[in-house]
Every structure is written in structure tokens, then in C-alpha cells.
Image (cartoon, rainbow, N blue to C red):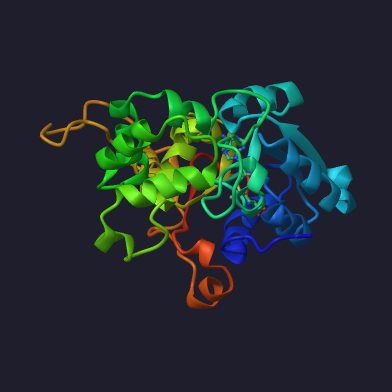
Length: 312
Ligand SMILES: C[S@@+](CC[C@H](N)C(=O)[O-])C[C@H]1O[C@@H](n2cnc3c(N)ncnc32)[C@H](O)[C@@H]1O
């Protein structure tokens, strides 16, 4: 089944112009191939390198993309290794890179993956379940201070210290629903009744920590721009204010000519912009999309093109 990708039309429109001239598109977050499908159906001029670190995603998407198999190369890796993936494939430059960050709906929906606070599952939350620390390790082995910092920073949760203290007292915690209940009880009753599920922010924070999501993003952005040919485009969909801030600052810095401190009377660095903004403001889903897919509510799309002598 092909799922409904977030801002599908906007992503397709943003990436297609350079792809019409041939070359390679990297979908670095293949998921269930929703965006990949749309793009492959929209133009036959390019080839796709599709990366995901989740073996389940690659297996399912591989079957979904069978009709396009001669144009698609599937790679299981962390996108932070983009440069080495391209080198292995003998690809010197690409026409586009798509990053649709975070977890996919199937990852959230399958209880055994341990991402959901609504279904009982093991405390796992690894996108790549073949290695690395799990949510169990974070929940049961981090100091209360470190856990509070994770929950505060990545969850933007104001009751982070109370929650971390409650988790510490309830250890060992083995499963998602027990964790969700401990978090819920740690939040004052009046606050619990407002907003979404009381454990949402804590689960998000632990997931980001387990998968080192912000580190991977910080690493891939310069790698993606390096890999782009002049005129090639980078499109990034974020779902979290910290992710969006990283992308926004990265693109803004790339689109600036001079990087001298603002109090310098003249430019001494001679730096030239490497990026051109394709979207000046982040693109957000409209009401119709939000009615269809409430999970898109925090989505923001930012697109930039690599400067240089364009072949397009
Ligand atoms: C939001 S989903 C992508 C959905 C996809 N665009 C679609 O239309 O079906 C994000 C996917 O990126 C993968 N992912 C997240 N971080 C990754 C990373 N650092 N390296 C590789 N894959 C990653 C996840 O495993 C997940 O399958």
C-alpha cells in the first residue's frame, strides 16, 4: 500500500525542475516510499537512490517500487553516511536530495517497535532495530539529571524534572504503556487535561535520543549540499522545532555571501553563497491535508538550490 506522503505535491514540485534534466535523486528517508512513488511517476528522466535505516521500511517499499525497479537502488544505511553511500555506488553528484525526517506511520503504528504510547510494546524505538541503544536503556539506565535534560531539550517538556524523577522511582520500566502511565501521573492533573496525550513529548524526546536524530541531521546537511550539482535541490521536511531550526539556520548561512561579524566595516572573508532559497518561508500543510492527515500538523518544508553554473 502506498501511503499519503506529507506535502506530496509541494515536495514533488520543488524537486522536479532539476530532475527533468536527468541525474540522480536521493530520497534519504524512503519510509513507505510515498514521496518516491510520486516523484518516479512524475518524471522518467532520473534515477533514485533510496535510503532508509529501517530494514522493514526497505522491504515494504522495495515491493511497492517494483514497477520502477530498473531506476531504483535501495540502500540500508544511516543518511548521515550519505557521502560514503554515494561513493560506494560510484555517484559523483546528484540532482536532488529529499529528507522527510522523523518516524513513519508504520513505525508508530506497529506496537512491537515500541514507539507508541497508545499500544503496549517493548521499550525499543530504534529505527534500525539491528543495533544501538534502545529506549529501555535510556529509560532505565540514564541518570535522572541526564534523562530530565533529554526530555526537556528534545521534548520541550516543562515538567521534565518531575517526569525524570518519577521514571527513576518506577524503575525498572519494561514497556511503553507502563512508561506512558508513569509520565502521565508525573504531570499535574490540570495540565494533563490540556493539549494532546500527556506522554507525547516524553516519547518524542526519548525517540530522538535513541536514534540520535539531530546529530544525523547536522551531519547530512553539509554532505547533501556537497553532493548536489549546481542547480540541484535540497528539500527538507521537519516535524519538530529543533529540527526546523537546524535546517533554517543551515540554509540561511548557505544563502549568505559574507560571513564576517556584523560589526566589520567591510567584508574581509570574501565568502560567496552556496545556496539559493527556493522557499523563503517554510511551506506548511493546508486545511484539506490536515483534515486527511492530522500527523502532518507540525510539518514544515524548506527547499534550497545549489548555486553555481547551472546545467538547467
Ligand atoms: C517520515 S518517514 C518518511 C516517509 C516517506 N517520505 C514516505 O513518503 O513514505 C521517515 C523515514 O526516515 C527514516 N529515517 C529517519 N532517520 C534516518 C536516518 N538518519 N537515516 C536513514 N533513515 C532514516 C525512518 O526510518 C523512516 O522510515
